[in-house]
Length: 367
Ligand code: 8OZ
Image (cartoon, rainbow, N blue to C red; front, top):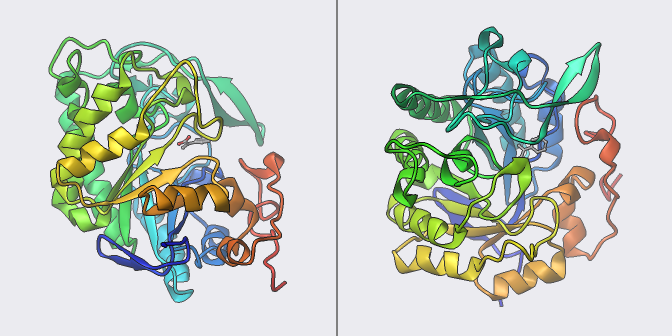
């Protein structure tokens, strides 16, 4: 029987266990630059089999929240270098999540105060966070503009450049954020994509940006250092697809030959219920179509896992399990899972924004 505590090779990485720190937005990078505090936070969690960073903007246009980090300017790369060094010194492995928010942004966060970009000019009924008078404040996202066809190669190139910047910053790889209603997911799904060109309409068209981005990143840094995150049915950020099963079947067939390190799937509603009655989806069938087409990457599952549910997932063929909130509150989550607890309780009030409190001051067992 395989357990969470058994090692596994994922692409170019040898992981000592199958426990992954999920990407977690923390809004503690002023001017989009990670700090020494960021390095401490990830170093404390380095016993994870794999750390996935918080979502990190590939361009200024790709940014949608106050104080989230980027990976497109020299000072950002320098900031991340201290993080990767700290994690590696502590014996860990870390990949960076590459993010373009698309329409989930606000004019105040965009270059020149312009409109956020999207597949189609359809506003997301969701909120983002700005800092107003020094206070994190939820605001409605702005009305986006539809991307011109001629702009799309530039966006693919931003992903490629960010992947190269990730290697320069010392990351062990990247995760393409194609989930949770951000740009790539907006292109995938019918509710946010009403284009009539080669990037809209048929499934193959809506998946085109995802496939082009993934191929570009793989070409730049290799499939063995590339993962991708998908969320077929999450309602996060107001995206919905009219028929997700064949859509993600197609995506799996496209990804299977690319030699990815892993596929990371959010089952159900991100950070919420695993079952969504009005959005049924067969995740086992999704994995089966990836494997049937020769996909060899590790299968990473996420959403509401505890030890028992994680063991069940491994028994049913998952390779890795990502934990989110539990990792916020338990820097030594691996040790705590191994001995069956106890677990610190995450404090929602300090998830987004702030300083050391709720970030680097959760105690480890040995403390
Ligand atoms: C919570 C708050 C802001 C952003 C995601 C990057 O859902 C996020 C995110 C989560 O993928």
